[in-house]
Length: 356
Image (tube, rainbow, N blue to C red; front, side):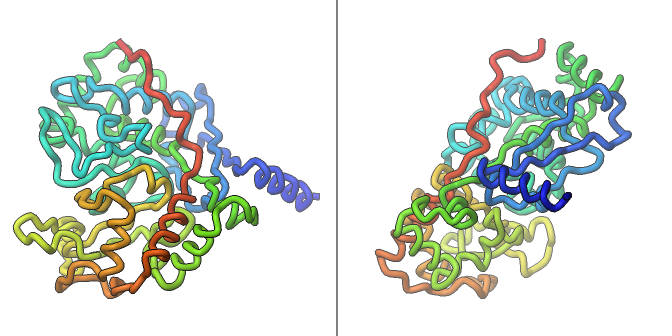
């Protein structure tokens, strides 16, 4: 009987292109959790629901997600009221900003590009160098960065949010009295970010549902190249197309004066010099320019870099070798990457009003 019920649910999910993943409120840490409405996240076809982790101390609720959305888009959460999380993670650009490196407060230039906020709930260590262990940590990091949001400390951020009565009430309703803390700010924004998912792409419908018409013949050839001659899957593996590891792929070694040491800054391990986290390839056609420094304007440029075997350096990953791809094979790879344009995030809109 139970097997039949499970089969029917799985069949319905396959037809819809989504798996419904109920997220229950189980944490005693939230004083008012019982009065909140739990949130049922829809995991699109192609993504691994087992890889989607929600911390026990941060169960997702509709109220918390909405608070996170407000905080994400509110420019008042910067030292001079000009920068929001959404300034560098723009919905129409698949939550990137279309710039080689991001621009922060007072038009200051950062040193790296803004990675997409999509499918962060399937990722472990956050940022290009993995310096944030959780999505909650990542969500509050930029506020205390003088180039990004411009606060000298998180205490300044909390003081500013506390000055807005509407936010004080929301935090009190969700977390309890006197619970407006940087940790709860991070929990709210992380909850919102976990709703930004991408799946059920043409590639998924071809690969999981067997829909032969979902992708072009060129994309089918590109898929074979991806898992064979082009060796892309050695790093871009799994349903989110990332091994969650850090690799030196020969970026930046053509200018030693501006070389970014990457993961080494965090780990202090020599093997991590010039290594950066493998990004997801989902929605890759919308997140140009590419690489941690935004040096490549097009996917054609990216593939050319790999085809040549990267820029030689003492710490180059041993998986990076010349590929000898023809022009037609490069085009097929790009067709395959285009087939990873999915759904599950396009509904997000900026709030029209903010707490006062």
